Amino acid sequence: MACKCIRRDDRLSLTWRFLLFLPLFSIDISVNALSVQSPKSGVLSGLLGGLEGPGYNFLPPPPMQPRAKALLEKLNIQASLEPVLAKVPPSEIFNLLSATVPTLIRGASGFFGLDYQLQWIPRDDTKYAYIATKTSQLQETCFAKSPAKPIIFYDVESNPECRRVREACSILSLTLHVRPVPRGGRQFRSELKQHGASDAPCIFDPNTGVAVTGADRINSFLFTTYGNGEVPRIFESSGNDNGPFSWQTVSSTLAVGLARLNAGGSSVFSNPPPRTIDGKPALTLWAYEGSPFCKVVAETMSSLELEHNVIYTPRGSPNRALLWRQVGRFQVPYLEDAHTGVSLFESTAIVEYLQKQYSIAPSPVQFM
Image 1 (cartoon, one colour):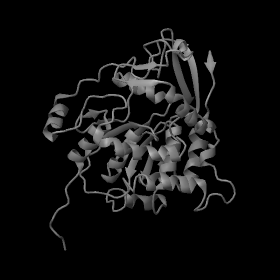
Image 2 (cartoon, helix red, strand yellow):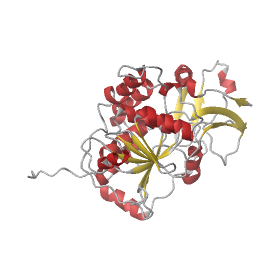
Image 3 (tube, one colour):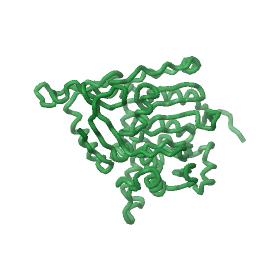
């Protein structure tokens, strides 16, 4: 039985349906299962009996390399390293709530893959699925056309135009080679001029040899080259409705400015890891735009100017199954550091690790 529901132009509808649906249940998220309990007299009790949710077919996280384990002990990481779905430490509640606001303002853009669809299929625990019953599981799919090489993206986490580009890349399940260019940055800002740009956002696609600047032009290029040729409505501009007071500009500015107060927009002193032997960034982040847990990690990487690959995993993306096959579970953010061998799931642990491993305290000495 196929349920061909919730395409990209219905994201706002999906958000409200979810918000209306959620109060009907008490949801208990754990590493192993999501138990769903409805009111005793409710009809849904029978329909949803035996429903298993996120984590029902997860495996324990892979063992960490000895050198990585020793490094984490040396860094004295205080945050929990044990991956738990939707875990929010009390000290991080306000931070994560404010990181959720941009997603609500932007109508969950970037949360779902392009042409997102649902279908109930026979249960097969050797395949990734979001939820399952005793006999079937919910298969999520979307349009995905991955380029051979990651697209280089010059990004500032607090830039409204960059936010719109990241949303588009998330919708398309792309892999980006991110080179952060926050204010005061010293690592990659000089490269912008090589691509005819004065500031972010700017992309260079090594697959086509094309450099593009500006959110509207970049998104048009991305959906034409790696999408179905149609730019989703949330990115469309009509006539002169793309000026400083257009919905695109206002919503994205509010999303990164009002709620997060320029987080990730200014550089701090850092000592980034060297690239791998084959010239790839040492850091790889699995994430999707719209997740507050992923956002706080991205802000930290932006401020520290940490070059990295980001593999987008929106709902329906084949990258979710790829991560599940690789580490036995799907949970983001997930950081891999090829330089140290460290791999982490929890956002608070990732942020603490990046700050302790790669940030540098500013020198008290005044230079001439």
